[in-house]
Amino acid sequence: MLKNLFKRNSEEKEKKEENTLEDAQEEIQEESQEIVEETLQKDQEENQQQETEQEEAGTLGGLFGRLKEGLTKTKKGITDRVDDLVKSYTKIDEDLF
Image (cartoon, rainbow, N blue to C red; front, side, top):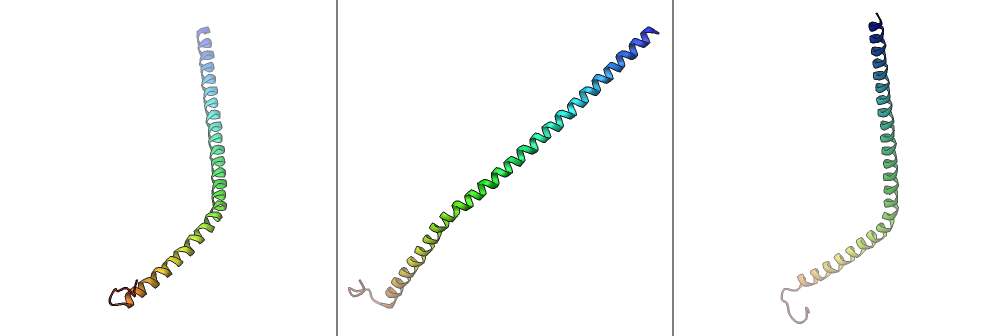
């Protein structure tokens, strides 16, 4: 009878220990998941800030982009005129140069 009583007590203790271990594991998993979610949220916020900064910096790039576009148009206009001039002459002579 005492053996059965001790057996039951030891079995109950083991079950309690298993339950506490399971509870601890669940808590650890929940906490780690929260940490991962917080980290992801912070990363997303940082990415958004970087994108905003790049867009703001892009306005300066936009200035140079517009300048480059304007110079490209000018270059095309000049080369088109030279092409038209060269095409108008059938012979290449000193007057052309």
